Structures are given as structure tokens and as C-alpha cells.
Length: 245
Image (cartoon, rainbow, N blue to C red; front, side, top):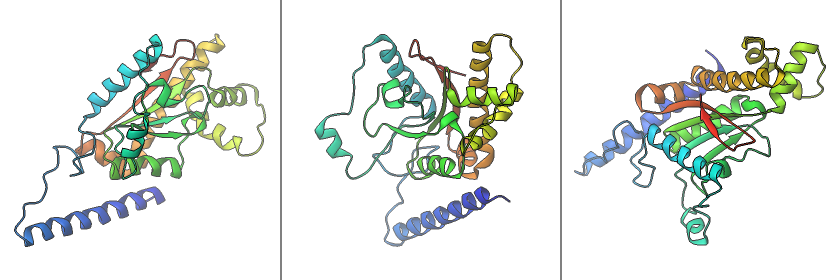
């Protein structure tokens, strides 16, 4: 059992005990325990009522506005900001690259409190990234996780250079390269460098989405039992369009 498995099991045990205590206390005073929305972990009435598919449609609609230059810039007002002081209820997790050209709130035309965003070059997973996503799924009942790769990703491009040319990388950038390397090696060769890079970007996003579920008991259990979905997508710099893989 890995460290991440131990974390997942210990958290699930803790939340199971807490839920049981809360339900027992409600019954003890003659009150019925609050009913959760089917397929969801929370009884918080403020939590997003969206399903994973509805969350994706909402993201797609926002991206369509962004592509067309018809953004609504929702949830940026002072009143809305004040409403978030007591808590957050995002409807989707976006694991995206750290690239400055791919800001999820802008790409999907969403505002404060709407998206739970984690960014790491090349969408590389480590325990901090996985734990952050677990928090959103377990504590905030977010129904959808999107791993978002993007056109001309520098981290993926650097990894291709290492694999194909043996180029040396310094510092902790080598950690990123080692994490992305399996995706590059699994991608069929293509004489067109741009096409090959695009294929590697897509492969990395798919692998991160798959590996996330393999590494985390919390996320895999939520997918199996609570209607949570983990999907991958890519972003085109030129058009601004997000395409689900």
C-alpha cells in the first residue's frame, strides 16, 4: 500500500465515523437526518446541485462565449465576493498547466468561487496536486474533474527534446520531464513536429486523468459510487477552444 492509499483510507475512515456520529445525534433527539442528493456526499444545501455532465455543459458554454469574444465575466461583483466569505461551492475542478496563457477562469468565462483550480506544468501529478483534488471532491463535493492540456505546452516540448535528442535539463525541471516522459514514449511517431507535440499533449492529459483515479482511493471511490467524473481536454491557443478528449 502506497502513502497516498493510506491517506485515502484514513480520510475515508474519518469521514465515515463523523457521518455516523452526526446521524446518530440527529436520531437521538427525534430528528430525521438530512437527506443528501442522490449520488452526492454532502447535505450542504449550498453545494452545487450539478451533475458531472451538467458541469461539463456549463464549462463548454462558458468556453463558447470565450471563443466568440462574448464573455459575461460572471461572479466578480463586490456583493458576490462578500457572499463567498463563509464558504466555497465550486462546480468543477480544473487541473491545468501553469502556462500563463491558459487561465481556467478566463477560458471558461467563470468567476470567483466557480472553479477549484490546480495548476502544474504539464499537469504533472504529485501528492500535493492529488491531495488538492481529493479535497475538492471529498470536502466540497465537486462532481467533475477536468485535466486540461494545451497547445504548444513547453513542459511537454522539453520532454520531447529530452527523449528524442538526449538534451539535459537542470534542477527540478527534470522531475517534470520524468513524469511526462511515459506519455511521450507512448505516443506514435509523427514526422510533423507540431502534430507530434499535439498528440503528446493529449496523451499526457489522458494519462493524468487515468493515473489520478489509480493513485487515489478517494477519487476512484467517488467515481464508482457518487457520480463524479474525471475527464481530459485540450486547449487551442489560437482559437481559445477547449476540446474534450
